[in-house]
Image (cartoon, rainbow, N blue to C red; front, side, top):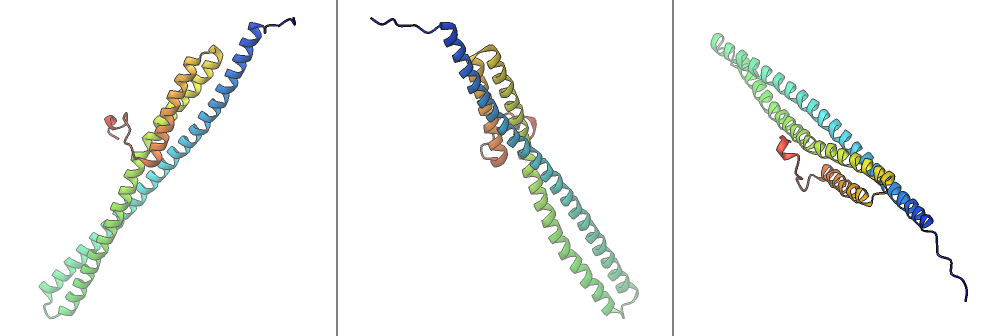
Length: 187
């Protein structure tokens, strides 16, 4: 009968730990990729929010200039009507300009409000990316510690935390689910 050699238990354990370490390392790299995507999404949302705010402010300043011009023409029309009734043609010209500025400011107001809505949309998205980044960073740290501690429990915990990070990243792009943690803070 041939002799059967049993593998060394220590060697099997080392191979298992090595395979576990590689699996965790690959998973950690995936976490890092999702973290980069979340970070990029957060930066984009913040940039677009600030841009929309600036453009909205510009529109409201333009609106205010139109209001001032409209009032100027109204006061000029009233002045001409009260001091020079024989110059109705000038009063009509001022009234026409007043009306034009009134119409133009309505268009500007609509554009400003549309920009404010865009700003608010990006403002709503940004915190999701912030939470995603935190969850993914925690997942990376716990996965790394799981290699050092050879702890499958920490590895599973890192996967759960990473899943939350992925979920919040997706929510940052879609704002479809209205995930918790953000609504209690006024976002």
